[in-house]
Structure formats: structure tokens, C-alpha cells
Length: 146
Image (cartoon, rainbow, N blue to C red; front, side, top):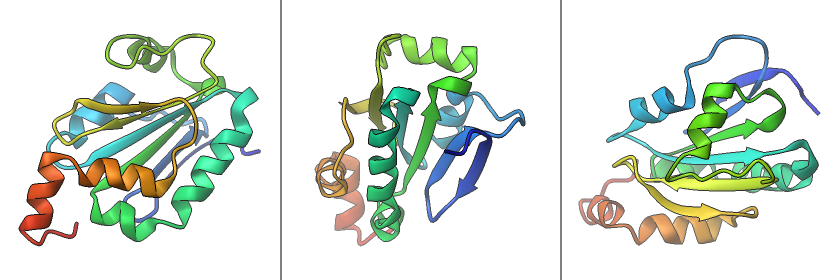
């Protein structure tokens, strides 16, 4: 298990884990993506590592689908989650509980939480949710692929 912060971009995917450098707060990261990108925030405690691994594996095979939907994935692990991000996630609309082992939030381009997950989400299900959103419908009708 990699315990350092590693930030990497993989065709529209961002994986955040702890590597010891200062990264922008989650709040600022989400604000910067507003109006441009959809974001799936995944949170996991160490006790839910298998779920986190399954979620990451599911998305690694879907680079094209993620890119077509302007979707970034941010993975946060409890062990090194900055206190400011923890407090941010405990507020509405996220409502993270200290006992939560695994949770995900789909955030639309408007910055609103569109869907919350308590277990790994199948990429097909996630894409159906996104493709049903009015903004995505408009993008598809205009022939937008990214």
C-alpha cells in the first residue's frame, strides 16, 4: 500500500494520496474545477482499502469514458487527510461521518453534489447518472465529446 501523497493526472483522473507536499485544499480544488469539470470524490479509511482498490481498478479501465464526460476522480484517504479537508467533508452537502469507511460524491460542473455512494460504483452506473444530467445531455446534443 502506498502511504505517500502521490498526485497524478491520468486522462482526466486525479488520484490524491499522501506524499508529504502541500496540495491545495479540497474546497479550493473543487472551486477551481467548477464550470469546467465534473468530479468524483472518493473517501476511504484504511479499513476500507479493498473497496478503494476495487474502485480505482474500475476506473483505470475507463479512461476514455472519464475523459468524454469531463470527469476527474479525487481519492482521499483518511490516514493523511488534512484537518481542513476533513472539516469541509463533514459539512453539508457531504455529511461525512467519523465512522464512514468508504464514500463517494459525484459533483456536477455547477459545483453541486449530484449523487452520493457508500460503496464502489460501477463505471457503467456512474456514466448513466452523468449522461442523464441536463448539462451532459446538452453537451451530447452539441456533439461534445470532452
